[in-house]
Figure 1 (cartoon, one colour):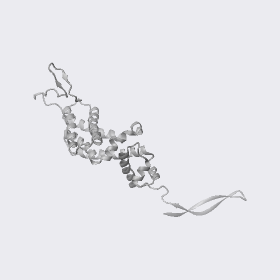
Figure 2: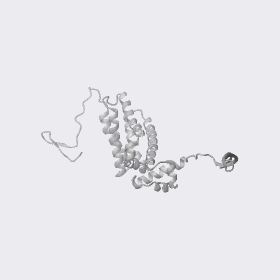
Figure 3: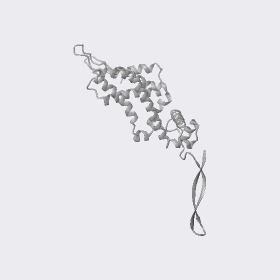
Figure 4: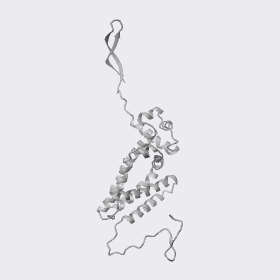
Length: 257
């Protein structure tokens, strides 16, 4: 809406080389700095997910994102600097949501073992929940050199810290071995989940495979992390390996790695 407000215009009088002041009214637009539309920003990010997942990050164009979001090309630049900026903002917002949801999942459990199992289940379930978003986070984010080299990924660090927090809690309760380094364990656990998530994105498995994969991965780690029973119990035998043993103790390859 335009309002009339008093203003002063200074002009030079040619005859006398003196400044004269003219009191007038000029229309101005209020507010002077337009507010950004949060709904429009959300539409742009949602459109970017679909375009990045459909075309790949490198092949995607800002104009395609604008068309998908049903906004003018120039509107994109009111909210984001460039395509990399869209990707980074998209990642930050989604990771904030994921961290919040994961904290809710973990808070339902008191047993650190169950917490690890539920973390694995919820993480792999993200692929099933929003496949396009999972593809962007799992694949396309890593195609941005700016993201990989320059972005200070605090959100991802917070996500990993959820795992180390569970591990430390388990150690405090005597459930997990005290010699486990949480910083190493959290990266190893996430790395396994991350690889299966990538597999689910690139080579879709049946839905029932997600709970199975979650149980398997958490089981592998938990069997190595859980503190041993008191010495009065029978000690477990040697861990199984992927090959067969010939007579004389020599290992025979089976093609499993």
